[in-house]
Length: 344
Image 1 (cartoon, rainbow, N blue to C red):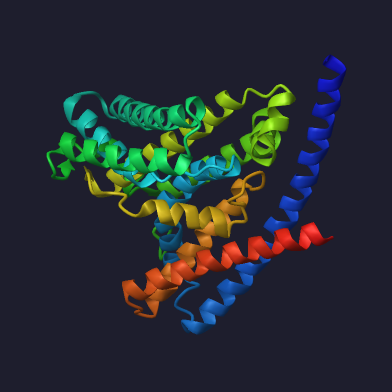
Image 2 (cartoon, rainbow, N blue to C red):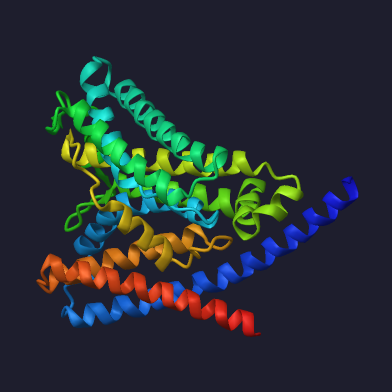
């Protein structure tokens, strides 16, 4: 049995290495395509896009979506989906605001305790999402749809239907509006962008360079084979939903810090943006393939499109249509890629 497991682990390692090489090529293609898009957009907007202020604004705008999408990537790689992320953003922001107002602690400690409270709530929601999937075999679409309603309703109950302003926003100002490396003519790099980049880097390493990441990819590629190889598939599924919930709550804390209040309506519709970033970034909705770097580029691409449409004064309803078309094109390209691979 040990020899069989060793052989299967070796084969799994080879498969992951192959997927890693393919992912590197995909990410390289995304990067090249993004650079071409940026220069095309800059020409279209007569130079208004490629300015330090506007580029910083784009990065600030994608922060929340990118953080959410990182967690969503893990879920989708396992052939699942998490529709509750937007509601958990709102719930995390409300819990963070309530915690901050209930405590009278020094600034650094107040921030840490508030962060832990938000992460705990988000992770708990993710764990509850996973239970029916793991224990009862229910479709993730149904269970996370239910959690989307539960989390949103709970946020409204806790907030009594109204935004909760912070009594003391000082502990959160650095994350919400703070910047560093400011020079004359440049307002600086927002700290929330740095937080986003840290999340992307850390979870890219987790997915691409650890045993945990290899198991996640194996689970999405062939769950039964992963189980036979000794992977605790139930535990792995639970962990990816916990990651998704925790990161969604972190995104809620970022928004709460930005606006100095936690609103129960915050995050409405954000699940579509997160899924779009993951799909555009090259993660397969069928599972077994995806990268965090690709997801980041996906979020960046969507952010650029939204920014350009704003610069061109395109109305928000039209922007929704464009986002839907982008998602559809990404799915079509993924289907064509699978068909090409199957035929070769």
